[in-house]
Image (cartoon, rainbow, N blue to C red; front, side, top):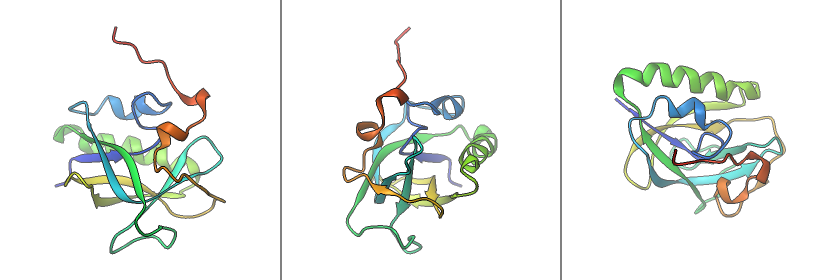
Length: 142
């Protein structure tokens, strides 16, 4: 059973939707990456198209998406995925949950873009480096 999630956008620590994932994670996560292409939707959140056997047509061969892999406590997995499914559906069902393997070797759940936006490529594959400054949250060690 998959009990990890890979996030690459606003669900990352320090971004506006981290609070939805933070309550479920069992660890601090690890930097990770996956094959695929990252895009700016123009709506203050990114879209990912993953490569692989079931790749979406929009993926660019050889591109990489940077993100973070988190372990979710097994007893919280269903609740976590339910919350994330609702959050990802706020874009009108334009995202779908898929299982993929990261470069770090983890089998994870991730959210892939499906349709509906005019997208601009993020060449670096790094949302945190690309995101608008107003989306960054101040994190403290308190």
